Length: 117
Image 1 (cartoon, one colour):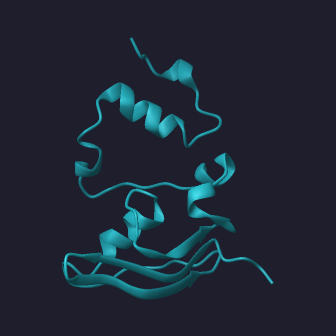
Image 2: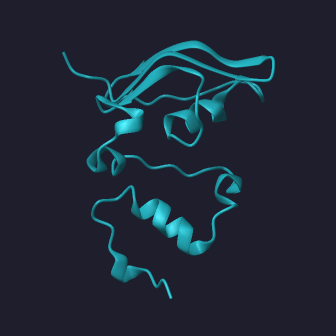
Image 3: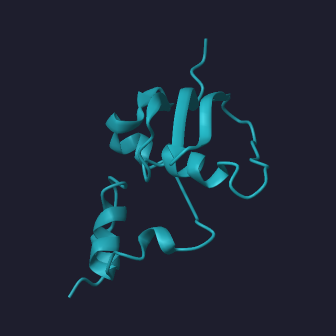
């Protein structure tokens, strides 16, 4: 049996009284293409932010590449790419902090390509 790269079990996230993710169960098999469709406020961005570890969720679990989200190895982190529609999520970081954030995800980060003076 092959482990799915993305395994979500009973994921819950609410904002105030509004349930955005309610007992979400989802397995995305290797090699598949998955789209998230829904109206504004349906939870698409919230789900992606939870999957990337950018947003805490209230309950449930997420495994990526067979590893718990909060214990991802450098090798697993290096397999993940994300291009946000807007950059609001990183607006609080200066350039040096942003590079440090991304460098932590890439075990083969080439520091010589980036000037940090």
